[in-house]
Structure formats: C-alpha cells, structure tokens
Image 1 (tube, one colour):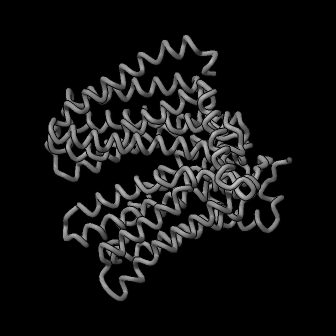
Image 2 (image 1 turned 120 degrees about the vertical axis):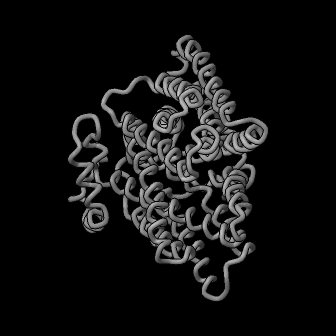
Image 3 (image 1 turned 60 degrees about the horizontal axis):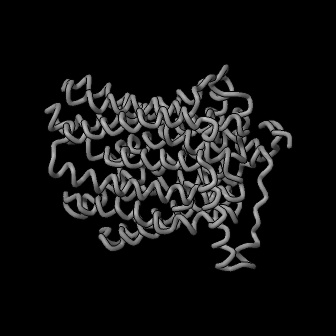
Length: 442
C-alpha cells in the first residue's frame, strides 16, 4: 500500500493538518537520524499528536483528582492513596479480557471510544459539584468506572503503532512516542497549576475532558499508513468462552516459545519493580539527605522526568547500539547513580544523578515494546500486550508495597544503596548471559 501524504488525504488530511500544523512542520524539518520521511508522514504525526494530547489530559486529570481528594479529606492524603491503588489494581483485574477487545475491534476506533468515555466520565465531577460538594463515594465510583473501561488504552495504542510504522523504524518511533508522552504528561500538571489560580479543581476536568475529546477525534481521523493485519473476529462469537481461551493459549505459547520475548518481559518486570517506588523516594531524599525545603522534592522528581525525556531523544538517534546491550548499559548507569546519591549530599549532585538514573531506566520500556511489536503477530498483539502489562502492574504493586515496608523501617540512603547494588549485579550477570545466547536473543 502506498503511504499517503497530507496533500493526498483529501478532507481528512486537511482536517488533520488543521489540528497538527506545528508538530507536523517540526517533524518535517528534522533531518538525519532524528526522523525519517517514513515517520514524517501525516498518519504517524496524527498518531503522535493524539497520544500527546491524551497524555496532557491525563496529567491534568490526575492533578485535579489529587487536589479534589486532598480537599475532601481536609488535608489527609489517605484518599489520594486509595485512588492510586484503585487506578493500579482495577486495570490489572481487567487487562486480560481488555486485550481480547484490542484484537477483535479496530484499534483506532477503540482508542477514540475509550478517550471519549474518560473525558465524559470525569466531566461528571464538575456537574455534581454544581449541586453539592463532591463526596468520597461519588469520586471513588467515577474513578473505579473509568479505570475499568480505560484499561485497554495502553495495549490498544501500542498494538496500533506497527500499523503506522515499518518494522525497522519502530525503535525511532517509540523514542518519539516517549518524548510526546512524557512531554504531554508534564505539561498537564503545569497547566493545571496555573488554572487552579482561577478555577476550582473540579472544573479542571472540563478542560481535560475537552483534551480527551480532541484526542479521540484525531484517533478516528487518521488512517494507518501500512496494511492492517487481518484479525479473526469470529472467534468470540462462534467459539464463545472456548474460543477466547484458545486465543489466550496461543498468546501464552508465543511467549513461552520465544527466548527473546521471555527475556524482554523479564526486563519490563524489572523496570516496574525499580521504577514504581521512586515517587516515595523523592520527598524522603529532600528531607533526609539534602535537608532542603519540602518543595525541593519537586525539583528532584522533575530531574528524574527530564532524564526519561532525554532517553527518548537518544532513541531517535541515527545509529543505536543493540537494544538489549543498551538496556543493560542503562541499568548500570542507573545503579551507579543510585549508589552515588548518598555519597554526594549536595543538591546539584542529587539533581544530576537522578537525571542520569531516569535516563538509564527510560530505555527499558520503549525498547521492550519495540521487540514485542516486531515479533508478535498483529492478530495477537493486543492480548500479548495485555498479558505483559498485567505482569508489569503486578511488579509495580510489589515494588510499591515492598518499598513502603522497607522505607518504613530503614532510611532512604539504605534503600538507594540496595536498589543501586541490585541493578548493578543484575546488569553484570545478564551481560555474559546475553553475549553467550546472543543468537537466540536476536
């Protein structure tokens, strides 16, 4: 199929060009290894724009929900914690059946429907606030409902990327996606902070809902630039539960029969285990090591984010090392950075080292997703990603719970030394393993 350009898309292309002229012009002007002509095509620009807007709305929504929950309990953060647990546990429970929908339904349409649903559901909160103060029960009910029906967003989006990008450009595409996602998610809270000066927190959800609606419109508008893998939509209807189970058995066999997929999934689980507790580490670093004002923790978390953002920029380079070696190098960098933070109790050193740690760990997820997208057949990719993300969430919960218990009894310096040492040991043990079995892991 010939890949279309913006000029050749007719009304759809003109409408897409209306919403994404700035991003399209920036991407079109980049040369060399940053962006090939393949990725500068209008469909991928549209996909990137829709994802960035969706992440922007998500960042604004989470900021608004946190502030609303904080106000409901009059300064107590317990409700904030409950919402975080709900938004982790509920998707874990429904991800596997959600993966079936991703493989049965058109992915762009599914993404559009899910984004519209999220925007509409969260917009109920300011409507309720018109009649009475938002209470705990109503907020929890809306959060649970949205978590159930939006669990498929991640698998659906990542499964749709190979429909827009050739196999040999997926690493660069996932680098751009990381940049757009991280950038959008950062701008969401920053925008919310400004709007909170003029608007009550519930009304921020109207703005974020509009962003979700715009994202949904873009997902519907764009058409894949590559042939879409044919998916058998009759299994669910003719085979019932037996057909569904057969499909998941096929997905399990794909995982178990591929050493590279098993190894990549293991790396993804490791990333979740080490990355999830970091939100608890930043405020403790500020108070226990740097003895800085509480606000300094925002600078530390920002440095970690900037490192992740820079990691995406590295991935769009022209010549990349082998993916697994790049991941292991990043783990070594993060491990050394964690170990050095307690030894260099200076604010500038802490910010720099957390930036390097975020940079090193940031390569794991996009490079692992690239391997999934390259190896797993398109008709099973949604179910496979749902399975992988279920393991990811399980590891994240384990990391948060384990980190909470450890930090409750031990100082954050001990936590960083242990985490950094484990990262170094794991990376150094895996390096000869990867070298020995490189033919099976290529």
